[in-house]
Amino acid sequence: MLARLSRFGPVVPRLLSNPPARFVSQSKSTGAAGSTAVMELHPPAHAAGHGEVNEYVKNPDYHGFSSDPVVDQWNMRVGFFFGISVSLVIGGTFIHYLPDHGMRQWARREAEQLILQREKEGLPLITENYYDSSKIILPTAGEE
Image (cartoon, rainbow, N blue to C red; front, side, top):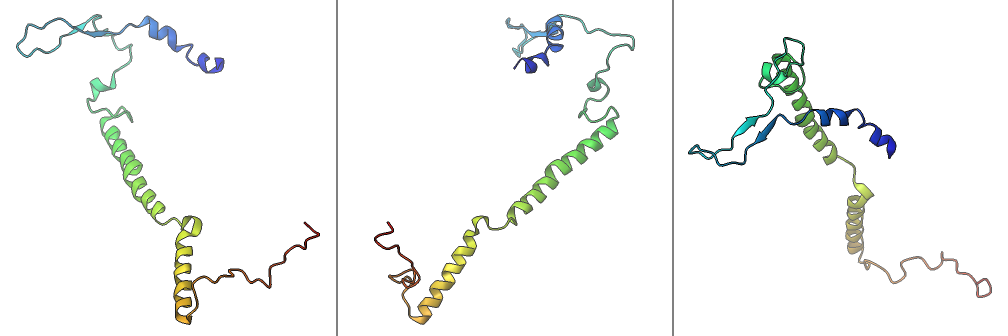
């Protein structure tokens, strides 16, 4: 348990040192629409090329695959095509053509064939002695 908690060690100081930058005001708005007002607590830091660049500023349709917008969109489309379309089609086909689990369908077909055969021969479907009594070996009274 302690080993799991030690993974969060470097994260906790960062979470405590950076308070959230936005809060939603709960006061009544003066506008006719009645929308909530968003107040900036800390102005955004505009570093002179030294900070991290937000990918959403450069590319509003950023999907997280690449910093280049064309490559990002291409990778997203290819990923979703293979991840969803192909896996659903191939996965569904695989599940559909799986063999008969527990051979239930085979057993039913075999039973139906046996019933038809016995009806043609005029035999009862099940005899009173299901097993051949001459092949059954019973223990004697002294062996029990």
